[in-house]
Image (tube, rainbow, N blue to C red; front, side, top):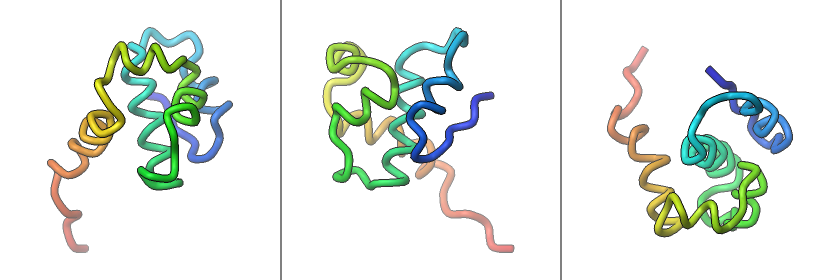
Length: 86
C-alpha cells in the first residue's frame, strides 16, 4: 500500500512510480491529500493534476468535474460514519 505524504507532491508521485495502479486512483489519492491540507476550494485542477503527475486532459478522461472528484474522494469516508468513541 502506498503512503500519501500530505503536502509533498514529489513524494506522492515517487510513491506511485512503478506501480500498476490505475490513474484515477492516483488522482483520488492526490485529491484526498490536497483536500485535507488546503480544503476543496483551496486547490485548482492545475495543482491537483501536478500533484498526480498528470495533465488536465487526464483529469477529464476520468472525471466529469471537480465536484464529481470530491464525491468519489470523500464518499467512502462519509459512508463509514463517525469514528467510534474510545
